[in-house]
Amino acid sequence: MTRPIHLFNTLTRRVEPVEPLSPGVVTFYTCGPTVYNFAHIGNLRTFLFQDLLKRTLRAAGYEVRHCMNITDVEDKIIRDSQRELPPEADNAARHEAMKALTGRYTQAFFEDLEAVGIPQSAFTFLPRATEYIPQMISLVQRLEAKGLAYAREGSVYFRISGLPQYGCLAHLDREGMKAGASVDADEYEREALSDFVLWKATKPGEPFWDSPWGKGRPGWHIECSAMGMELLGERIDIHSGGVDLVFPHHENEIAQSEGATGHSWVNMWV
View 1 (cartoon, rainbow, N blue to C red):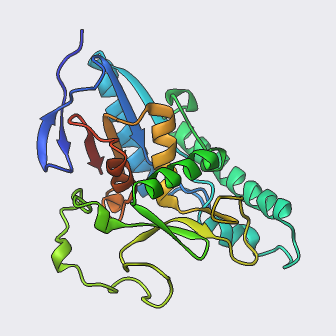
View 2: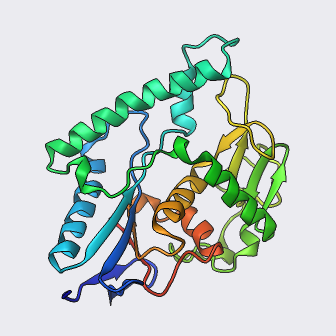
């Protein structure tokens, strides 16, 4: 027997009842840390809220399947992990350096969670992004097949013009957005300045994976989409993260384009 729970939905800006797609079972995805440095108290506030929400749902009688990712490949991680390597270092050495950095900060993060009463056993899934590169590549290919992604010089970009509801979570006025206001207009070969990268072609001195578009690595926007859809299914009940991720938080756009959102989706950003 479950008791009713009502939450504020960031998308609709209303308090709404939680209506899981599977009665009695809530699928819950939370954006985890990017492990290039130590977490600070502001980061931990987000994780404490997510843990409180999960405990509340369980106390109300729901089974909660909770997935929190570990982002272990990203620009800052590559920057900090590769700086001591010589230019001639091979790809295996570059991956090892990245793994050493992220392993150290991942362990520190879990120790911090334990200190505030959140054990690793509280999570159903704790995926690391580097363990799901094939799923990310497959998802990018699906978006390409739908005409929602396109390749340029070994990189792949999401075509936001193909998604009319783009920016709905942040309630953006797309017509009033100023092109080039926050990006270097000459840096990227894209159809539109607001298109964002899904797969990045490798640059000298960077670790890489092989892909249909050449050597490269995932853009962080595709990572949570692929992990969440792989582990929780293509439709998720609750998605939560820090308020700074409301926009630009493109994984929501990717998920919507793949039909991953449903009537019971509750976006919560704290």
